[in-house]
Image (cartoon, rainbow, N blue to C red; front, top):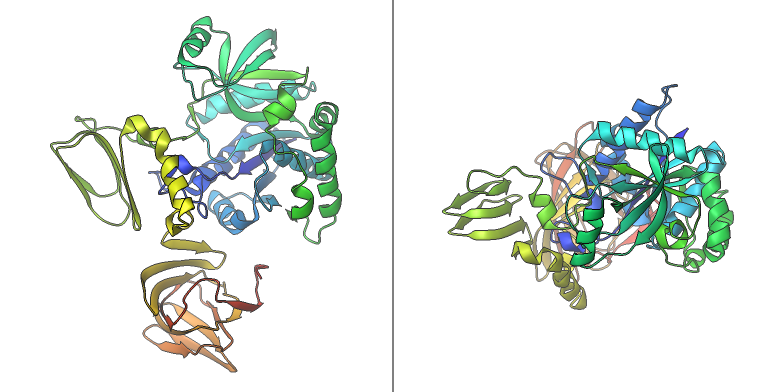
Amino acid sequence: MIIPVVLSGGAGTRLWPVSREGHPKPFMTLADGQSLLNKTYRRALQVQTALDPLNRPCELLTVTNRDYYFMSRDEQDLAGVSGGFVLEPFGRNTAPAVAIAAHTVSRQFGADAVMLVLAADHLIQDQNAFNAAVAAAVALARDDYLVTFGLVPTAPETGFGYIQQGEALGEGFRVKRFVEKPDLLTAQSYVASGDFLWNSGMFCFKAGVFMEELIQHSPEIASSVAACWIAMKNAKNPDVLEIPSDLFAKVPDLSVDYALMERSARVAVVPGNFGWSDIGSWNAVRDLVAPDASGNRIVGEAILVDSNNTFVQGSDRLVATVGTQDLMVVDTPDALLILNPERAQDVKQVVSRLKKTDHETHRLHRTVVRPWGTYTVLEDANHFKIKRIEVKPGASLSLQMHHHRSEHWVVVSGVAKVLNGAEELLVRKNESTYIPAGQKHRLENPGSVPCVMIEVQCGDYLGEDDIVRFEDSYGRK
């Protein structure tokens, strides 16, 4: 049985201002309207459909930060898949994540279950070729190999690690060695030799074999992850397992490659040529869009006058360029990036500066996703803030209270069920209610369509931390 394990995390700082701490790279929506995570879920489903002769449902496991659980669950719904979650309190690299997943898969499906480990922020454009590569990897995994996927290099790329192929093993090869990111001359020699592949960061192996090899080659990770597993395995909800933060902090921060794949003698590689990209910069995003006759590429609404080789990605307003050459423009409602394509890797320096000043744009978009829906800040001024709030059908905000602000709610679409102190009322389109400071209240959408309302906050302090929750459907405090 093949169990896809999706590793979802990473800030994606080179893709700011679209990728942010609270809405990272896997949730980026591409030009076709799908996020990278959504595409990964669909890819896993298609692998299972193509390779399982018994036509069993796809059993997914997602390892992600607990802050991204509800967004990830929404992406599963959009992709038409379902599966369990392992929630990390903070990032700890890929070796701990895969080890926790191996414990989870082994318990639920047995030690011989084959794990297909996928990164949530990769793009693969040739599904059939990928299915064939997975089939070859599964065959080797069933012979107790730890399998990684190598990509046939198309250029002497210095931003990727490389894998040198050894003796043939069926449709794959024994790994001779792993090589860190090389300089340009070394990369050129690797590509010219034909013996080297790019390291994709995807894996395939039996859950039990992975744990056996981890105990042998990285016992500290194996034992510290086992302690986490003992503490979490009997959780009330086995489909959503949370890793204890105090125990997880003791797990070494190492990648799967360094902790195991570079040390084990049971490692194989399957070559692939399936249109892979890690979408590591705005250049990679640009290259997904077909150019016009002048080399310009547009996502969103834009007018380009006398411009060449210009990439524009807009969101909710028109972007215009005049006389530009070799330029990239990425526009979001609260931040604008203008970029020389040759400096695409340096966007992370912008994020570093934003973090140093604690600027909100490194963390959140103007539209913020919550388990119950979204809110968008329309205006934020001294003593008042205006928001657009959209609540999913059947969802509700927590029973809460604010010390420093009052709120005026005007429903503009749908219907809201409001608990305002001791009073419960239905507020319909073009109706409003007032929530004074210090009063318990709750907003719920009892309808079958989204409820949209405008909220006006008034007070001396309007921070998001001015909230006391008494009851919450989503386990928030």
